[in-house]
Image (cartoon, one colour):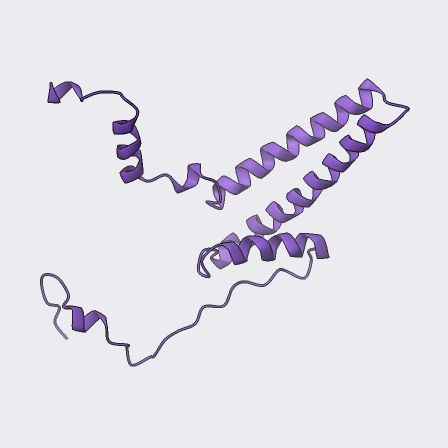
Length: 142
């Protein structure tokens, strides 16, 4: 079959192929995740399109879920330390350092998985944003 030049006609793109409609299944949480981590996996996977996570990104997503749950736990420990009658600055400092490490890892993994707003950056949106930022005309437009 030879390819035709130009735009495809509306009728050619509105016909279902001979293969029919293919349903994409969302990836299931790996068995090696805890129940809490698997819930995090499901929440993330259900929030995005079914084809968002290719097979090769599953280990990164699993690590993201592990770190998210760890981050929740560290946050609980910080709350407990703040309310403790035996509050110690050194224990509190250690918990805050743990929280910072988890936050850094989560931010990195989320960016790699394109889950953050930064990862959704488009040149079209950037052009609109810069025009609305009051930067004025470009030097060559003056």
